[in-house]
Length: 223
Image (cartoon, rainbow, N blue to C red; front, side):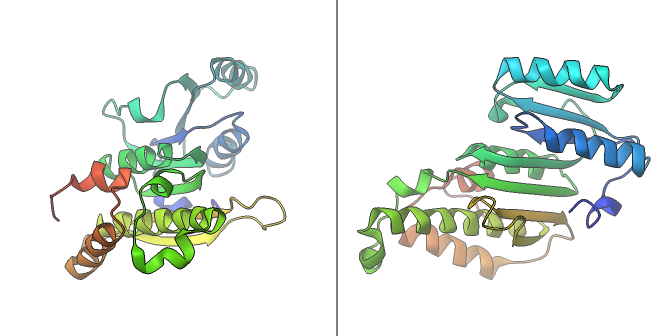
């Protein structure tokens, strides 16, 4: 997974893991980029559980990982203090936390974003479309459709902001059903007005206002 994007990560840059939890992936990334690839990157992990953050900081210190630090903070409140952030990662950041992470990555101009969404509840309570009642009248089907629509909209918005986007399975279904990854790599921003119109049409037809759409575009802005 990391080999595919390692050339996009420059030396002496920063990687941010948002919603890092117990940070197995965070530690693995630090070891890979610093001890194996010798990129001299620093990594910051953020999570809401203070005891977990304290444990991870102690573990990083014990292992001699001097450029790996963890902070207790909500993803929505993370700020970039003029650091060169090359990549953001979210692994099962719940609901709109993924949207805030992606928004940070876009506005910071990150070269790479790797986002594994979780618990996409937001659109479930918003979707309204009489032509889709055959699906929307059944709770479990509506839930799955809302999750797929959420991630499709996220992928489109990221693409519109100048990224090459690939939506992929990153682990087998037997391990977890929450296995969709949105992998984005920065490219040139091109005219994609047609794709923006398609996105706006979906937003209007389903009577929805996804968080990422609002953060990036506002209610009435355009590219």
